[in-house]
Image (cartoon, rainbow, N blue to C red; front, side):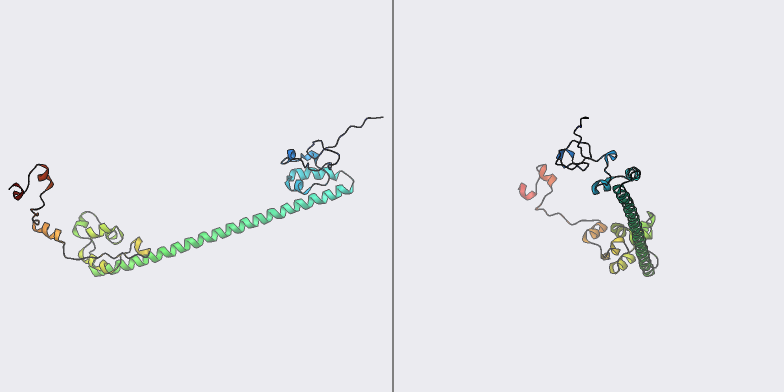
Length: 237
């Protein structure tokens, strides 16, 4: 009599006890995370194995069960065909979502570009209007003689830095922009760009223009005289 050997294994090929199901995924902790080799696939695949198998593996398993003449083989064929159709529908839906997302992104980019172009045209129109009004008020003279000698343009006075405007703008331009805002980037962000102007020079400018300075108080001698040991006549007396 031929001797029969114990040959009870799971899908991975490990030995199992009689109480465990044969040709099924093992329930031991040592087998978690392992994938079943396609050569050990059962006729009817479990759901987890069916979903994790590649298209090539399912194709090979289909050819394997197609050669068998059992009801389980016919069920396995329908199972594989249904899984392949499900994957095709999922791929089609994924491509549709990607196409729709790309269309939405393209529309968003076009809308942003259109809004930016409209805002740029609006800013250019407003800046042109302010420039025409300023030229009409100043008779076309926005830059003083010092600025023209240094190559300062009207655009720098209109939209440039504030210190450039204060230094090189004509008095007429300063009077106009003391009441009207300059068309700078700060103006289009909603801030006030008017620059207060007074044609009267300050005390320091008047004294420098006349060539003299106010006398220093005798009670507060210079630091240099203190450092050299000198002092006021009253202190020496």
